[in-house]
Length: 470
Ligand SMILES: Nc1ncnc2c1ncn2[C@@H]1O[C@H](COP(=O)(O)OP(=O)(O)O)[C@@H](O)[C@H]1O
Ligand SMILES: O=P(O)(O)O[C@H]1O[C@H](CO)[C@@H](O[C@H]2O[C@H](CO)[C@@H](O)[C@H](O)[C@H]2O)[C@H](O)[C@H]1O
Image 1: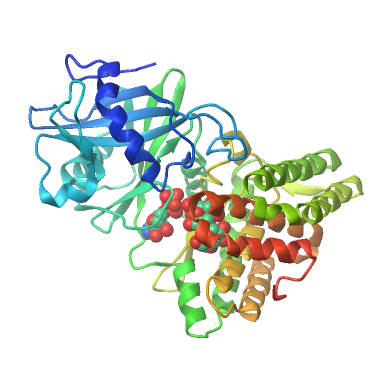
Image 2 (image 1 turned 90 degrees about the horizontal axis):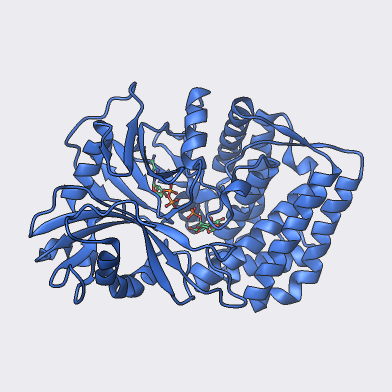
C-alpha cells in the first residue's frame, strides 16, 4: 500500500525498482536493521514523500518501507511474528555526489526511473537536516508527515546540524549543541513510549528526563507513526557506560555514582507511578510473567546453542517466580523505562544524572513494552550493566561490580522507600531474563560480546552471587 509518491510521473513500483537492489545490499549493513542474518524477500513502500521540490539535480525522499524476510528456523528476526518490519529512510537523490557526502553513499541507480542518479543517506546532508528542524519549528504538514511542537518551547532557526556519531539503535541529529533529534528507524504503529513517557514526566516536572520540544509523525491509514523526537541536547554530558569504563580502567571506585544513579532511577519511577496507572499483580499475573520469561528463554536457546546447557537451571529461577506468585503476596506494576542500562544514563558536568531512551527493548512488541511492570525490572537492567562493565575488560573486576550493584540498590531505596534487594526472587528472575535477552541481542548484533552475558548466564544458572568468578 502506498500513501503518496509525489515526484511527478514516478509510481511507487517504479521508485522501488530503482532502489531495490541498492537497499538489499545497504540495509543489512546498518546497525539499526533488525533483520540481520535473514535474506530479504521483497520491499513494500508504505509511504514516500518528497521533502523539498525536486530539481533534475537534487531531491530528498522520506520513505517508510516494509522489508519482508522469511523466518529462518532458529533465528527469529527483529519481529517475533512474520509481519514485515517497517523502516524510516531519508534518501537524497543527486546527479553527482560531492566528496563530503561520499561516506553517505547508498549506491548508484542502474534501473528504473532514477537510473543515472546516486542515492545516499540524506541525514548527512545539512540541507536535509536543516530542513527537518525548520519543518518542526513551523509545524509543517507534508504529505503524510505531520510536524508538531510544544508551543511553550523556543526553537531558534538556523541551528547548525550534525549527525551524532554514537553507536545507537536509531539515528540522531544534533542542532547547534542545543537540541537533539532522534529519528526512529524501525517504525511500529501506535503510541511510541519514547515520546509518551518523556511527555508525561515533563508534565510531572521530573527534571531527570529531557522534555520533548517537538516531534513528527506519519499518518498512515488509521495509525499515527512517531518518526522523530526533538529534545534539549544535554551538552557536556558523559554517558554512564563511558564513565564506568573510565573509572574501572583507572582502578577507581564507582559506587558513589552508582548510588546517585539508583536515586535518579527511583525519582523517575515515582514520577511515572504518579503520572500513569499502576496495577496490583496477583498470582495469575506473576505466573504469566514467569511463563513469558520461560518462553523467551526457549526462543533464545533455539537461536543461540551456547545457551542450551544452562537453560534447565535458568528455568528453575522462573519456576521460583511462579511459586512466589502462588503465595500470599502482591506486587505493584507501573510504567517503567524498560531497557535501562548505563548507556541510557547521562551525567552533567555538575554531576546530575538524566535518563534517556524510553523505547524499551526494541525487539519486544509495542503492546508489551507499554504494559505496567514491576519496577525491579529496570533495577535488574542496571545491575546487569555494572556486571557488563566489569566483564568487558581483563582481568574482570567482580568486587567493583558488586560494590556498584549494592550502592545502586541502596540509592534506589533511599528515594523509593523500599530496597529492591528485599525481593530476591523477583530480582533474580528479572536479572536472568535480562541476561537471556542480552545473549540473543549480542548473538544478533555484536557476536564478539556474547561471552559477556554468557558468563552471567553461567553464574545465574549455578546460583552464584553476582560477585562470584566464572
Ligand atoms: N538529550 C540528550 N543530550 C545529549 N546526548 C544525548 C541526548 N539524548 C541522546 N543522547 C546521545 O545519543 C545517544 C543515543 O541516544 P538514544 O536515545 O539511546 O538512541 P538509540 O535508541 O538510538 O540508542 C546516547 O547514547 C547519547 O550519547
Ligand atoms: O540500543 P539501546 O541502547 O536501546 O539498547 C540495546 O543496545 C545496548 C548496547 O548498546 C544493549 O546493552 C547491553 O550492552 C551495554 C554495553 O554496551 C550494557 O551496558 C548493557 O547492560 C547491556 O544490556 C541493550 O541490551 C540493547 O537493548
